[in-house]
Every structure is written in C-alpha cells, then in structure tokens.
Image (cartoon, rainbow over all chains, first blue to last red; front, side, top):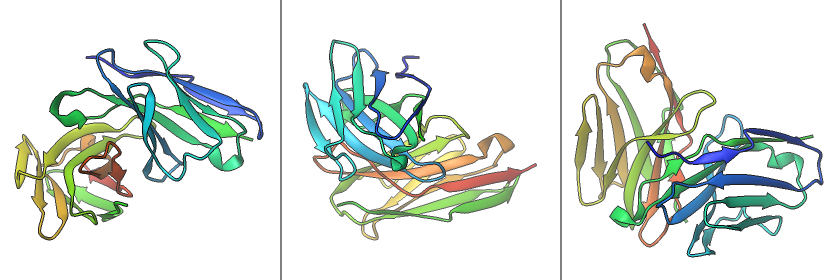
Length: 115
Length: 112
C-alpha cells in the first residue's frame, strides 16, 4: 500500500534555530498538507498546497512557516526561528484528485522538540 | 471557520460492548466527515468516512451516522475488542475547502 514518508522521525533543536521537515507524498497525489499535533491534543491544520502554491492556511501558519516543493517528489515545511511552543508532532498528508480530493493519507510524523 | 466538538473525551467499555462517540459541527456547508483512529505514537488512520448526501454508512463493526439538520455525526463500534483501544478523532470539511477541522479526540479503552 502506498505510504506518505516523513523525515526525520524526531528532531531536537535549540530555540531560534531553523528546522526543515521533509515529506514524500504518495506519487500520484496532487494535494499536500501539513498538520501538527501538540502532545495530548487534537490534530490542527497548518497549510494545504496544490499546483505549486499554497491553497489554504490556518492562523497558526504565520510568517515563521513556509512550504516548498523543491522537486517532483519532496514537500517540505520550514520553521525559520523555532519557539518552545513549536514543539509538536508534525504530520504531512496527501490526497489525490479522485472523489473530490477528500481522503487524506497521513505520514508517520516528525516529532519536533524545541529546547 | 468550522468548529468541531467531540464527546466524550474518554470512554471505557467492556470487551464485546458497543461504543458511541459523538461530534457536532458548526458549518452547515460542511460536506465530508471522516473518522480517524490514532494508536499511541502512531499516525492518524482513516477508518470510515461519510459524505453529506448519505445518512449512514457501515463497514463491518464500524458505522457512522450523520444528521445534517442537527449538524452532528456519530461513530458506532459494535462488539468492541481490546485492539479497538486508541484515540478516535472526528473531522469535518467545508465545501470548497481542503482543510479538515478535527475534534478534540476520544480516548477509547476496551477492557478485556
């Protein structure tokens, strides 16, 4: 079964450092997403990406965040200057164009710990 | 924006019993309602979903019902097993949007 893969699985960084989280969506999927989940809390939407541009973003996705699809396979989330409250599990997800692009497949997540 | 409320936050049942988790949503234009199961330290995995043109959907021991008038939908698990123990999240998606808005989650514990 096709999977969304994410790297790294866990990253520890110092406050103020830049972090890049990487995702390889399912190959025939066209819509890409980042969600985050602070420990013990619900999954929160950050941003969606389609046709090489952001299609939707939440209030959480401020100027410290950016996304990029640098090549035909990778989809990255960059946090420019990490804060303690950025510590969370970050999930990448993708969906295809069939059935109205409804069904999201999540990756295993990247756990970010900001010290 | 969309707001999804989920109840209960925790649910403990005996093996073999049924479990019901309920969600309400605020955006009457929402048209897609998935349920995700998340085991400890794992990714959310889709277990069942329903679209707004359907009132009920069933897949073996799992069923989802949708009441558009009342803006609520429910997950029903019958004949629960210990491996059903996990956190369950409901979600909703509005027309023309890509983002899912998740509920706060229900921790289901099935006691053997």
